[in-house]
Image (cartoon, rainbow, N blue to C red; front, side, top):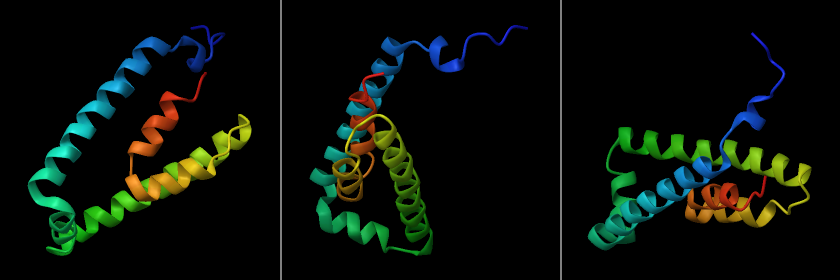
Length: 106
């Protein structure tokens, strides 16, 4: 078995981009439904509804933090200012990392 081609070179950028766009659109639609149906107050109420809801929320915040560390390192390594993306991640959640990946340009 030959390992001459790194996994990053064997990837399909067109397919990766299509998947990212699909995820972004579906997640955007879900977010729009949640905001229209329950509003921001409903979102906050859902987070604090019980311990399980709070645990899921904290888990997601930690995931965004870990992804932000990756965005920081990737941005610095590729000459991009990572701070706007990181700040946006803590305001709009996963929308920021998804758009970061779409605009990464590799």
